Length: 195
Image 1 (tube, rainbow, N blue to C red):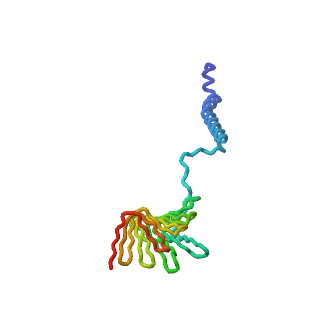
Image 2: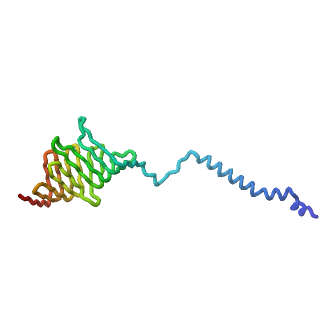
Image 3: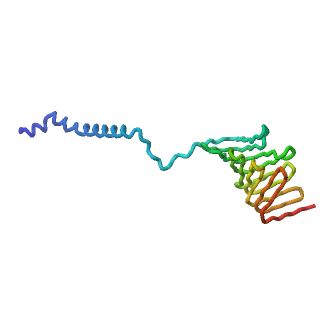
């Protein structure tokens, strides 16, 4: 047997050749581990950040107190508030406003927003119109209403209907001061009065 043939039949040569894939695999794994340790402290840049955390609340109650007395409060079937937000989104709500000692206002709607910083809320319709009912019998109906606590006003730029004993007034745009029972409709006013 020649020397070359003996080398190929040698156990050491066969073991050495079969160890090459194992050695290459170990070197590759070592390279990956080394690279991982180098990049370990870096944070990947995400072009699509995750949405902020959101709190969902069932049977939500919110009240606005002035001088130790509740001025208005809102009850809603559910509400949601995102992290660091000052506005709460609410659904299926009823807001009660104490206009005067002898006069209360109840606003109902399907969807709305409470602004805790500006002390106001906004109500809009989804399938049913928003209604604001006064305890003296007047009712304001619209697709959306905004109540501003600072000026004690109800506003809308949409179509509005005011129903009362023996009267129907409708038009577009409303500014109302409930405390004084003052209503101003901006345009397209139609009124029907009955005896």
